[in-house]
Length: 258
Image (cartoon, rainbow, N blue to C red; front, side, top):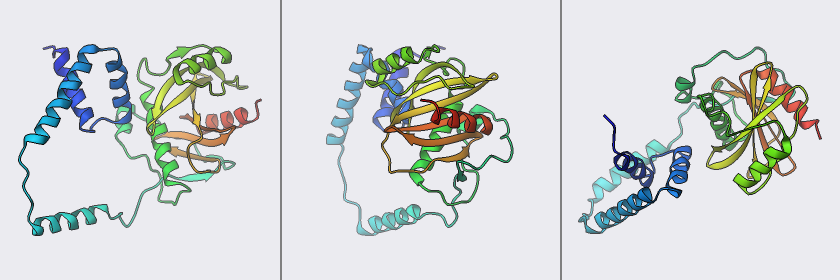
């Protein structure tokens, strides 16, 4: 049975209003609503309904004993566990010992991305690493890898300029074939994404203007994806691939190509 458009979109819009969609889902919904008057009107009605309910539903003062119990429960839930599983970070020059195994995209997206119990240089960078790995896996689904095909850096830079309002660096990289580009969302920001090929394998480069505290170049792995991170020219770069060797070779070639 087909669900009516208004009913299906109503569920999504309500979930977005309640903060239940992730950054990618919320952004996709916003893009749809920008061109859909029906959904804009539906969202306006839902916002009005929520405001009316909040103003008309009676409110009752909780007893002090209940507030005290809830506060204690919240403090206990906020305490970090004694042992945290974290990403394994390694110096950029250190080679990976062995290739990473295969993965099932749907299962990995819901799995933890940590590999070892080790301190990392930046918890924020660790969270970004996990989202880059998830975005890489998500793009393996049919039709998600590229928004714009092409191997001409100037043409892809112009395409980014139109979609992002700025043109990130786009270049040919020795040993890798530029296949095209797409736009993605990583850690609440829009990211420029370049897709390269090497012997039938894919290397994906995510880049955006610098936004975080300085982090030294590192290599790591998350959710079966090898990653390399560096900063240059006011931009942050994340290279991702299944093969650690591909990532290392790509990062080295990119940084040494003008």
